[in-house]
Length: 542
Image (tube, rainbow, N blue to C red; front, side):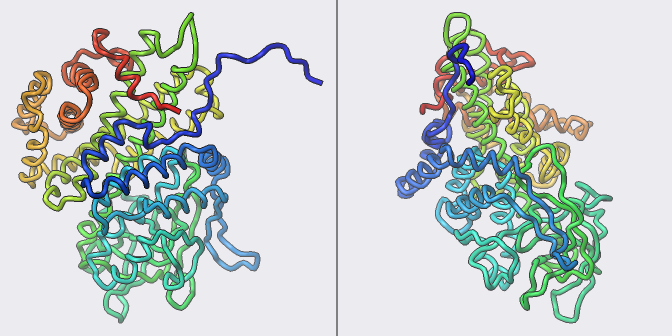
């Protein structure tokens, strides 16, 4: 019989059994601000139900199990037949099934759909991030498919279904489907035009056989994929179903699953096409143009995913500090820790506020020019800040934060992912330059948005002036593209916070991020600011 040597004290209770949605002031206020008043009551109920589920012990356990039990590839059955199936732990199916039933796979057809989905995605990702990949791909496939009305008529109802129906069968026999995407090849990477997968036309118009290799195929267990391949008239976009209408398996040889740093619950694979049947979407030679709407939507999800990871990291850090005592008082009351927590909270709130502004713009046809620049700007900056936030938040828990049971290592491993997927930092920065050079309406829309807060704070006004000076000087613009895009992101975030956040939040952001009164690490905010109010706002109440 083990002897009890002492009683364990001074340990914060687990952050569990709370409403992830209502505990997040930046998120709830953003929904109230951007969503039509007639939709608010219904949205509040939906999001609070999802928030309680995300904060439950059950969902947190699913997240742990799905990451401790990574997907397994089965290339052949017991008889040697090729099956190329991916097996997941039941916890993955429960997470994904709950997300689909909550409508996180669609936003395109209901009023306020993008904002409501974005808020839900922010909430549910905090339970577990890996299963967000097939959700994102499935949601984002809709605009590409709409370029072919016949394909859209068949596939869109299945893509937007709230029924999760796993397993490989003909799509016509299923209540709902998932989509993946395959663009990246070994010789091309981000340079998708270097792809060498061949598409050979068949007698039936619009149909082809594909031959080639995809180095990174997202969500390889899905029912269908959008892929790029070289047709006779150039790079084109194709729909590749896993199972053909007659029930036979389309050649889709999964060579291996990637052994990734994080995102362990989610499958990412390499696939060989060898006489694989495909249906073209859009015109030959216009593959990038056809698939770009899907890419833009998934880039927004990268922003949302990073904002969710940051929010959960900050929630864990502030919760810990609110209950842990050291050196004669609560950690949250210690001036230096309060500075660190406030700095982290600013980064998280700025990310959430920007992400929701972009989602709201997706619901407004008149704001597409704004999105053209704002999405890659946000994708570049918010996803880059995620790793720094996750690492500092982990440190707030001390050595306990470095232990797997705290959940913080999983957040840290997940944190670089969204900066890499759907175009790395350089790709985003160069995309912003391309838009600036070719689409003056996009730059005008961006600057008009920023200008809505002009005059509210001298530090923002100074940052806008500096930005305009940089935009007027195109000499060596590519080499300083990251610097320019960073400045654009900070100015946009500052403008939004001045318009929408409490004064203490906007003041601290402008003083540090725009006014230059900031160090090179978190916890270096001016001590004269109202940091206690910032921390209190970010601390979840259980």
